[in-house]
Image (cartoon, rainbow, N blue to C red; front, side, top):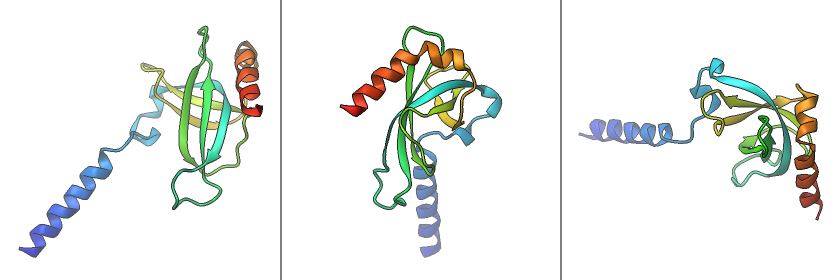
Length: 127
């Protein structure tokens, strides 16, 4: 009887973990486009169990619309700064599904089109 209880407990724990937020690894990499983004906010991770260098970030990415889209990711173990250009991986069918890709600039024109948003976000951070 104890063996069955442990099995049920393990299955329950597995179910709880599988119901969490989807990660990039849960998708096929061909489902994403790389677009230009910029980090707007970097803060210490909210989890007390994380290393002091683990950060939560917020960013925007520009898809040629009037307004940029906003995104974010938790538990990034990299040294990142507000205002830093990044590449954002955006789902081809749902532009609200996005992930931090890597540091860098892939399209200076897109970044320049969204420059006023970078300036506004940076000014808000400095106030």
